[in-house]
Each structure stands twice: as C-alpha cells, then as structure tokens.
Length: 536
Image 1: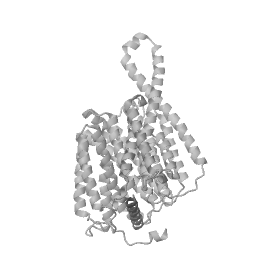
Image 2: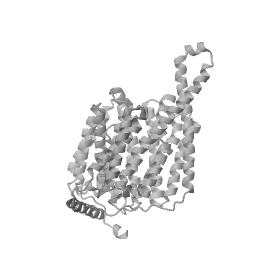
Image 3: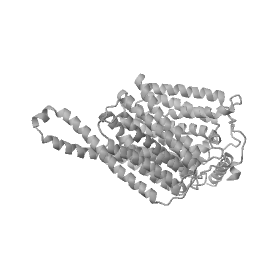
Image 4: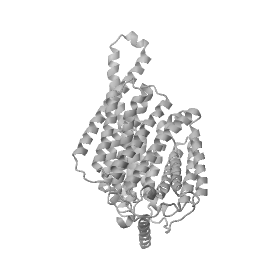
C-alpha cells in the first residue's frame, strides 16, 4: 500500500483555472454537489400538496421518489467508466441540463409513467454529477484514500440534504406554491452550469477509455427488477397485495427480470452484476443488516407523520421542523463515526452494536412515552438517535464493501447492490411490512375499543356517533403504535444480543487504489472486452 500513497505536493484541481485560489477550489465542487443533491426530481416532502393540486395519489409520488433512488443505484456499476470517458466539465454540464429538464417535467406533469421515468433518469445523472465532484476532491478529503473518512463526508452531505430539502420544500410551499421549489432548483442548476462553463476547463484524463463491453441489457433488466420490487412495496396495501392483478403482474415481471439476469450472469464475460459480487460475504452481511435495521426504524415512514399530525395536531411547518432534530443526529453520527471508526479504527462489530443500541433508544422512547400530550421538543431525543443510528450503519457497511476483497472491476457492482439494498429496500420493504402490521393491529384494537363503547347507553352512542368513531380511531392508532414499537423493540434487543455474542475482530482498513491504477484496470477490462467481442 505504501507505493500507492506516496507523499504528494499541495492538492490542486487542474480542471479549475489558476486564477481561482487553490484553497477555494474544493469548496467550488462541494457547492456543485449540494445543488445536485437538492435536485431530486419530485420532492417527497411536498407529497400532500401535490396530491391536492394534481390527480396523483400518495403512492404515485412515493414511486417516483424511489425511482430516483433506483436510478442512482443502477449508476454505481458504470460511474467509473463514464468518468474515464468524459471530462468532469462535460459530466457536470450534461447532468445539470438533464436535471433542469427533469424539474420542469416534475413540476407540470400528472402522468405517473412519465414522472417515474423522469425521476429514474434524474437519479442516474444526479449520481454521476455527485461522483464527478466527489472523486475530484477525494485526495483533498483524504490524501491516503481512506474510504472510511471519505464516506463520512459523503453521508454528511447526502443525508443532511435529504432533511434540508424537505424543510426548504415545505417552507417554499407555505409561503408560495410547491412548484416554486422546482423553479428555485432550475435557477440554481442554471447558475451551476454558468459557473462550470466559466470556472471548469474541459480537461480530459491522460487515457481515453471508450464505453465498450458494458452490459446495458443487464442494466435495464436490473432496473426493471428494482422497479417491480418497489412497485409491490409501495402499492401493495393500496391494491390489497396479491389479490390484485397489478401486484401479480409486477411480481411476474420482477421475477422474470431477476431470472434472466441470473441466467445471463452465468455465461456473460462481464455481466452488469456478477455472481462474484452477489456472493461476496460482506455484501450478503450488509444486505442482511440493512433489512433488519431499516425495518426496525421503518416506523419513521409509516406512522411518525400520522402520530404528529393526527394525535399531536401538528401542522406542516411544525412537522417539517422535526427534520432539524434528525439533521442534528446525522451531523453527530457522522462526527462520531469519523473520530471513532475512521480515525481510531474501532471494530465493525462495535460500531454495528452502537448503531443498533441507538435504534433501541429510539424505539424504547416512543414505546414508553408515546401519548396524546407530547410536546414537540420531547421528540428531539428519539429523532436525534434515529438520525445518528442510520448514518452510522450506512457508513460502516459501505466501508465494509470496499474492504470486501473484491477486484476493482467487480467492486462497483457491489456498490449497486449496496445502493439497492441500503437505499431502495431500506425505504420500501420495511415500511410495507410495518404498514401492513399496523393495518391489522389497528383493526383488532378498534374492534376491542368499539365493543367497550357499545356497552354504554345506545341513545348516547347514536347522538355522538361521529365523534366516538374519530375517538376510537385515534385511540386505536396510539395503542397500535405502542404495540408495534414494543414488538420492534424486542426484535432490536434480540438483534443487539446476537451482534454482541458474535466474533468480530475486523477493523476498517479500506484504502482505495490510485486513480492511475484504476485507469489501468479499466483499460485492461476494455481491452479484454474487445478481444472477447472479436472472438464471438
């Protein structure tokens, strides 16, 4: 490793002219990243406003939002190839132009297929622009290319922007209209394009690597599988799961896409995602942890909003102010992970146990303190711990994939799997399970509460029927939430026990190779693909 990371001179970015002070150059690209990350197609925080202003349902907007995450995940497998094919300037200009068009479409269309496809494409270019910027300043962030340090920066940007964009969207809609958020982002993206044209030179790398040998059919099939999986989770409850032809059709199409991809991976020279990436122990372990962890905190998506709005009576601005608590947790979680995991090299086992322990505090707090009279400030503790826990788990297990021992040409494929399991499945599978659990639990508790009411005077019941029905529903919601928090708390405690009893001496040592070495690997991959295609 020593020859990979020999001492270098002062950090500089040759893409930026020298009349820009050297110390300011990295911050220019951080500014670009922030603009790109804020531009996500649809803004889920404005879902209620979009439902009221268009013919869209809540599920339609969620599907479009998650399509953006799928586009980001699919891009991982080819983002290095695109970086070595096009200059940073061209990547940023094209990505900004695509995101401008995507914002204009999302602000004006009520066509669900168009909205979903637009957000998918926006997610792809959003990821590519983010990677173009972050890879440019990687040596500034960590001269030895320690990915544990780098991922702390990545998640403090990405997860923080998720919270801040929600706050910006709601306040924009509060003072004007929800469409104005799209217009604001169009203006910022246009500003970014102007700055790129003036301040970023079209510097091409020392080696031109064409886009040969990429399994684009595999990319489409994997995207189809992820879309079908997301469709089932998002629309499952609405269509009553597999009783509906829509869910059965999505299941068949998803299984067909998955089956064809696995079949093609058995004989293709370079499939989009290979068995080597799918069978890697660290990838499998990360997938399992994501499924368990994000299901435990899926209550965030299912009934935190319902509780705060229906039971506590918060309006939209008070609801979105809760994002500040999560934002504080994200900052604290990234800082804690940086000083302990990235710098002091605490074990993976220790960090995972800490992440689950914070999730336990989040679940336990709601289980013991959930009530009708909770003040907004009292929600700081659970939301703070949830934000810290999720970012710790994400950084730790993304670093574990870098340290998985996979060859570099397979490593981006593992990132695609990680992006799907960590972002897409984490945001859809857990809420689908918890949402269905809530429906059954609420029906049971509403029935029990209704039986106790029917034992009172029938004349009183008839006179106050509407009021009693609303009271029963709210009481059933609170009781059901408390019950689900209790079950999730038991699962979280069991999971923490398993983690503490497991043997885990591994510490982070995720060092990235030099860009010159990566370039050499990619060039060899293209040369091999050329030879393979010639032989066919």
